[in-house]
Image (cartoon, helix red, strand yellow):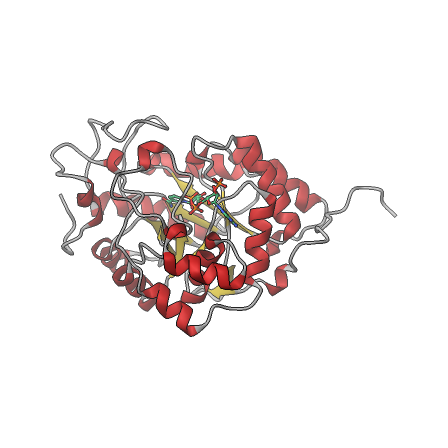
Length: 345
Ligand SMILES: NC(=O)c1ccc[n+]([C@@H]2O[C@H](COP(=O)([O-])OP(=O)(O)OC[C@H]3O[C@@H](n4cnc5c(N)ncnc54)[C@H](OP(=O)(O)O)[C@@H]3O)[C@@H](O)[C@H]2O)c1
């Protein structure tokens, strides 16, 4: 017998086979919860990589990565070690995303290859265009920072980027491609012109920001909604906060349900998300949090009355407004989100 270390699931973890999943239009199954990896200003790349390592041990199989999070080079060794120790690659669901400064036709494949190399994988399960706007800006800049070359959504340009993603599917390097931060009018154009349809749209989704119209459109068109900031991003940096922002985990409806079930309000947000039909990708580097969340989602479901009560607390409160992606001449951040159903120019 070999003495090589074996992948050891944690004794107090959750059997990944018990974790619910969603079926994509290709027939593939995506685990219905993923671990976010955007450490923002608060958690360092080594802390995030260590969390991924332990999250795999407690039963997470879906990891939401992105080039711009600056930690794929540390998450890669964790993934490759787990696979070398016997965790089957096909049990994992690994997502990465193309950053806004790599939309040019010639830049897409090299950017993808860098992520694949850093993640130490042969293929990705999902590759997303992170935002539908090409632009350059330094990580962590103030919300008032603007790229003088930023432009609004230009469908022809987006399709050039999308065609490159389609070639990655053709080459067997990516199993699914998708979008993030899209709106209904933008998705309509993409669905009309794509040779390979997007499998998901990743979008901000939490009880105070339910995006019902976009959510319904995404589902009606056979895409799975992936919900980011599912707890309302309580640890986001100051620069991403405004005076009008509301706090999901303080909402009396959420708190009341949490108290009844003996759970943290954050976990109620995640249970609601999964039962509603989206795939939440909560971030955490704290074992007790991410383990607690996973245990709770395989536990007693929220009641129909709980689900209805949470449906009633939508406050249309977008937290990740995207101000830094605005172009010259844009009015304000609402221009990024096509609120009147037309693509803003
Ligand atoms: N596609 C996009 O454009 C996009 C945009 C934003 C985010 N994302 C993805 O979505 C992920 C999640 O979003 P997010 O990081 O903004 O926010 P989030 O998941 O809503 O909030 C994360 C914070 O919630 C707290 N938390 C997590 N689990 C908890 C638990 N069981 N009990 C109590 N508190 C808990 C932690 O706060 P403390 O650390 O303070 O304890 C943690 O830092 C990101 O990491 C990233 O992967 C994607």
